[in-house]
Length: 494
Ligand SMILES: [Zn+2]
Picture 1 (cartoon, protein in one colour):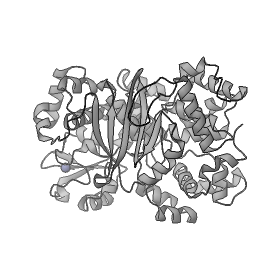
Picture 2 (picture 1 turned 30 degrees about the vertical axis):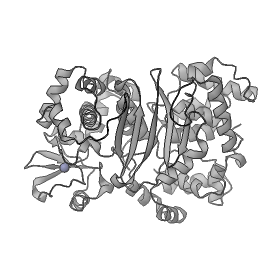
Picture 3 (picture 1 turned 45 degrees about the vertical axis):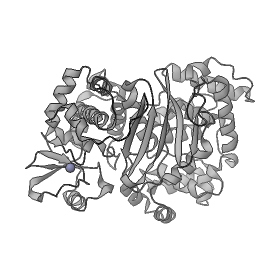
Picture 4 (picture 1 turned 60 degrees about the vertical axis):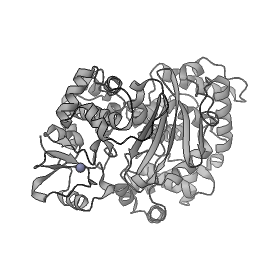
């Protein structure tokens, strides 16, 4: 297996020798003498350069016959960033794999969903990640299994199922082969101190510093849907539902470890992989800050803002449908008005649940809103109809938020629904698809922040921000006096 051609040997070497956390997960270090692969931050004594190989993904190192290091735990590194030059097909495929996309259909089906040939997809993966899609999926499964062994007290039979191994025998064999230890021996090595309540799990998810957690909460707090989500004492909480099973989760900063602490309450451990991957996407943990700051530095306004306030991320969402409905409800009203209205919608049509704090409802599912009259909410007929049509399109599968369609195709389908215009489609693409280059080009808040008057001028100015226009938007919004200037936007959809 070839090492990746995207890696710059000197950059990797410097990052390795200085144990630079900003490079964590951007490449992996394989040591020829120990046959182990490590993160850039590994605390073990550094090997000599001549005994080291660099790989752009954990899967590539694993394919080349190296084992994950038990000290730095490659399974804990932040995910592979979408970097400059990676075709969007690769990022979209990684998203689908993270969402369990390779679980039932294999590479053929994955390629079909992405609209490319499977040989082409394999070639792209080998070129950019140094490993095939199935090797990437396999490594992720192995890493997640290791995380469950280390960070939870789930019985091994449940760990096997939750990490997609199907049966305990295969799971045991795979773990022993990779780690040269049994799952039970590995669990003894981990120092678990907290005994969680039943169906409750704690995870630590790493990011590449800096991470502007306050900026993230400042964006999420005014938009938190009452009953469904809340921001409280530096912590974000929300209700969740997967395969019709309700639960909740709570996320806070673990600054000492360059990570987020996540507490999940959910009765089916098989959903943990999806839940954790969604949390990672929601809090933009794959972001490569160094590359973003560098990319935005050509614009003097953004260069000043990124330097003054580093580490801002693009807030994703738990559920693309919920985000889209909220964006429609927010058309032509204030952020506060939209939040109140969304809370009323959840209270009227959502399923009651008893969570911690103020968590009392699940956001209504598409099937519910598709058949609802949406009366008593004070919506115009046209707006109710837009929400119903969106809900129907989502429950029929015509619109999906998994990123399989690519953002242009996604926005085209969104705009086919009467009442959804370019602004709403772009805003939803930016937050729900994790597309780093998506941004609402007609947003008045962005125009004002740069003293521009036409969307065309904004689009032109934004050319230098590519492929990080979503991050540029976050910086411009965060500095605006009126948050996102929703109430005043003249070019918004109606
Ligand atoms: Zn290591």
